[in-house]
Length: 180
Ligand SMILES: [Fe+2]
Ligand SMILES: [Fe+2]
Image (tube, rainbow, N blue to C red; front, side, top):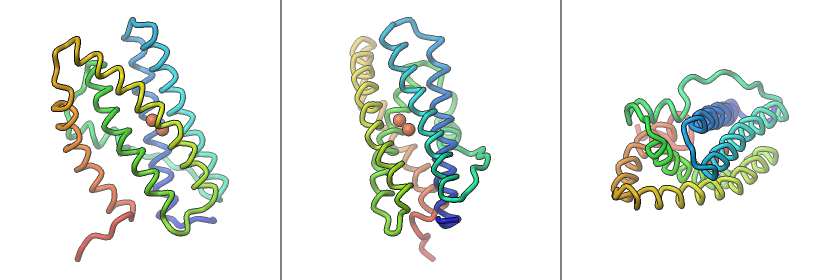
C-alpha cells in the first residue's frame, strides 16, 4: 500500500461520510415542491455520492481497501444535535458541516507527504464544495427571511456542536496529537 494506515482510515472515513451526506440530501428531494430546490438538492446529492466514488477509487488506486464505517460525520453530528427533521434544519446543518469540510480538505492538501492521487482527489472536492456552499447559503438566507428566523444565531449554535465533533476527529484520525 502506498499510503499509511492512518491516511487510509481518513480516506475511508471521508468516503463513508460523503456517501451518507449524499443519501441524506437525496432523501430530502421527495419532500420538496420548489423546482429549483429539487434540482439543486438532486445535483448536490449526486455530487456527494460521486465524491464517495472518487474516494473509493483513490483508496483502491493507492493499494488500500474501502471498508464499512458506521460512525460517519453525519452520525456523530446527529448524536449531538438530536433529531433534525425539516429541510431548513437539514440544510442549516449541511452548511455548517460543508464549511468545515471545505477548510479541512484545504488543510489536508497541505499535509507533508500527501500522495499525489489523494491531493488530486482533495483538489477536485474543494472545487465542487464551493458550489455546495453557495447555493445552500443563498437558499438559507431567503428562507430565513421568509420565516423571520435569525439565521446567524441558528448557524452559530450548530457551529459550536460541529466544533466538538471535529475536535474529536482530529485526534482520532491523527491530525492532532493529544497532549499527554
Ligand atoms: Fe463532498
Ligand atoms: Fe459538499
